[in-house]
Image (cartoon, rainbow, N blue to C red; front, side):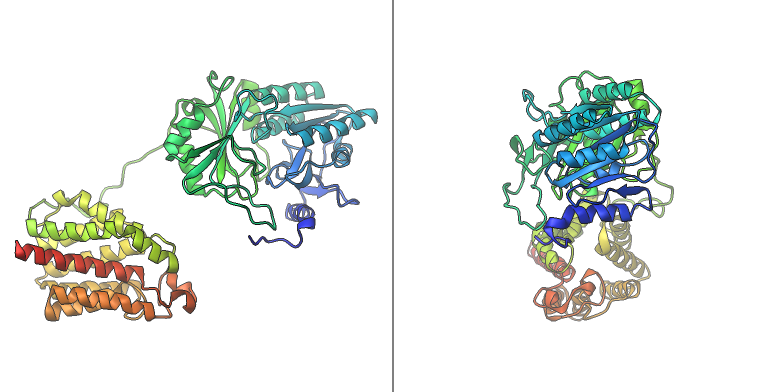
Length: 550
């Protein structure tokens, strides 16, 4: 896999320099030894307790992204997924620690414990006051003697940083940080591992599988499961949380993206978690956000923290650090009704016509059945969702077929246009809404079906700016409508199919996403919108033959 790097050996140093350079003067770094990578505040506060953390790189924005007022005084960055050396940690301590002392926040990994521990001893030997807090929030193995430190560490950063900024003593800051660490628990889920820069990972999960209870270094999860829907996954994960979370009346929740999970997925997961028994006790929400990642791992972690008044106040305290996920007090979602007039007037009066109903159903079912093939075709020239879009539109029509004015052509087409405009997504939904709305208006003015379809086509050309040869659904629709006027529905279906197949020979697209592709990516692949139109006309023609036979 390709990565945007210069050299693997200089990756972390280059990243640290980029972070500091882009901070607008808020951050600084230590210089003089390339093996010592310490990010610190440009304007330190030597009269207050310093809070220092760090660990292996690859978890960005943790830890260097959380250096700033009310958070960390310094972050010590190791190589990717590797602890920084004791010398590097000591350099960070010496750079920011004054008479008030220093608190080290350490994740419970062997390398971090040893290197941060040795640096603490050396700092104490030099006369500095140093305390440590160990974070072990992982619940993957309930009986583990050494639980890992995961995203719950960030709660400790914020609470300790706030206490230090408030002028608390080292002893008070350390006590509050330890109380926070003891009250935090985390569980992770992922569908892919992390990719080390400059390397290609070996896939270890089959399609539809997930690993539950994983760490942040690409290691396998404790349990391999079939990935359930988000709501079931949220129930599964939240049911694993033990005391102190299970018995807490008020909770904070950090929903953390492990690296490459989309914002849509993270929002869905957040909704699902908040709907669980545990989620209903959440008072403060942090995220969903990328806070402690594992490079590009496609996964998420849930970190719960039992709240008391002091911890809650610390989490709510403002900080100018941009990467910090601001805690928000949860309230009932505000939902307002749709504005009046959206449907364009009173709904049409339903009427029945078995022949019309059969033809509409035939087209809808053909498009639903073609969802996967059309998606596969669209993946070659677009974003891979054309089949799903047409199938969604078809399902929307089928869901209301009993409420349509099937016996009245003009109102029926206007109703279809309104329904597609309201329910359908993407360009095709808008185009179909325009077509059927224009069709209904033309029929209402006395035009026959062929002339009304021609009016609909012209409205599409006016609205979308496309024409014949532009690799759109018009390449099938225009010849179909021309043939309908001249020869009837069977010939229209054949003309639509010929027009759709001809788009495979077109090397440029005039509009839509395909217009941004090179000729080599288009040639040989028909336009999915045109293919869908051909399928619709073929279904209409076949339905007409069945009706006539019956």
